[in-house]
Image: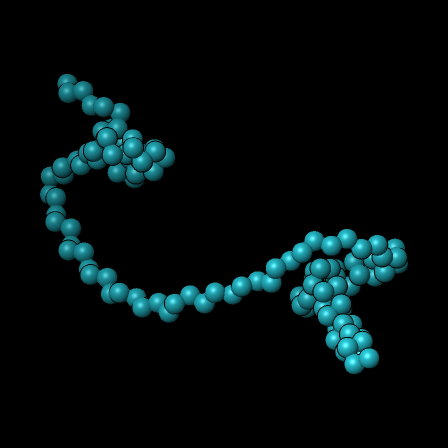
Amino acid sequence: MQRRSLIESLSEEERAFVEAGKPQSARETVPPVKRPTENEEQPPAPKKATPVKHSPPTTIVPPVLVSQTYRLPAELVKELTRAAVSRKLDRTAPWSQQDIVAEAIREWLAKHASKQASL
């Protein structure tokens, strides 16, 4: 009776599973074992892959966010939270409290800061 190692007794699928969990250095030291079959057919020649042309990735640079702390009336915070949750459920942008506040301040500054500049 011929003795086989444990890895030789595994099927190809089992061996691939075991090999996938090994570190790269361990995979290189154990050569794959191929079992010969009686009526082994030659596998078909691999098809040449047609190159896929990809367009260059577009980079979107998000705005730099700076941490600020402000004290707001409790009722305003509750209303902001309700609005943010409602918009999130409706999937209406902006839905984060941060984005809602940023948009509100941006609008306020556009309306009121222009009056200050003209004085």
